[in-house]
Image (cartoon, rainbow, N blue to C red):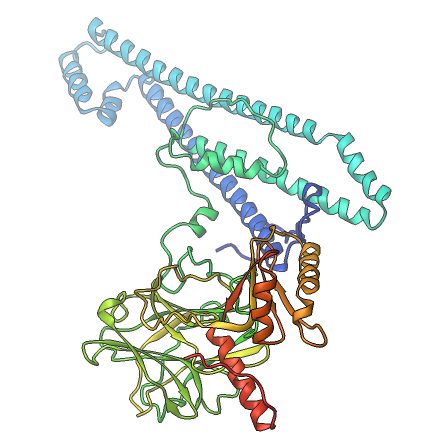
Length: 592
């Protein structure tokens, strides 16, 4: 590894700024700025590595050339010195035999030489001279290729400078002052980003040239098009990754080494987009790089002894619709050994009282009735009716090197996905918390009887994901399509599609005016409107008012009774129960 004090180690780069062409976009987040900074630093490391490789290749070539020249000089010295026999003995066994025979036959006459031997020696000298000439020509051709390459790079740099141009830079400096505000800072940052991208373009070209030099390939000058400031690196990357390239063994960069290859067993699939912290969610475990996977203790006293607990923050039970962005998905990457008999997870509300009340319980049991997945809930220490699914109907869980479990919370219940397969749904049996807050995720150390559990947890992710459930849920265990209509809520469809917040406000005001007379004495109606939609929900004062609105508004809007989710039914039941305890009569509708 490269030392932190190495002079070749590039200085930390400043945070890249948004170029002026993208100034209308949302500012970069801290994570995005960190990613750009890391990318720039890696590219500088690549540039240093390429230069070191080129220097080493040049040094080896010079050493080989020097060895060959020394060898040639030694041969010439031996031949000019008259000791042809020793020279031939050193370099060629057959030549040595011929020369020895020639020396023995003519030992009586040292001053005379045979004409054939002279001719052979002359031919050898000419052959060696030809080899020297060829080597010199190769060196000169290599130098010529270097000159042509430098000239092509210079032409490309001049073209890039013409694209940037001093006049364009002056315009960018003047524009912020004309508009007002802190334009000087923004301009400096934009110019810095342009310089960084230009440097990356130069480096990519140098990186390619270095590989051509080391592979001893002939340089072919290419016709350079006019690259844009932002698209430069991506164009080079496409050329490097082109499978039709003549280079059969291209050198991969550091970026390719980092991102390439199969997904590690401790990480999620790239399709899930859960490998890193992002705007959609974050990694809850591990909290540090290199942290070992969690395993339950070997001999726990009870399920709480050595259990692993995590908070699932920012869960909003009142905003679980498909159009919301609330946190609703927890993903777990784990390994259950072949000999493991069981493991489990629990999701509970903050007031679980030592997990006496559990909203969702997931428990695969390998040796129970041929293997069963048990899903259940727990209310005040009493387990509910379990939902059992044969493990033979699910992807492999026990004995697999790594497995991914995803649990999504919706208005209907908890959807369970194993390796991307929708295997079960536990519809809500208990009311969710009233207000936005955290949920509790627990990995018990044992079952209720103290039998230890055996598995490893590699990674836990929590955040928002769009519903992974398909339209056809007929084959999903635990799904009981709840079709109860809402007594007071109306579904108004066939409206023009809206796209912006002002349009949402106008749509809401229109619905309130149209349905105000069905809102009781005060004319109070509740209207729910979503962006990018062609419908609206209107809740009126009573069921009688809803029926009246269906008749009277049929000629103006397409109106139907809205269907109620189980979460809404549970909330209404709880509200009715609380009102009854206070002596207030409140409407409640049975939903089972």
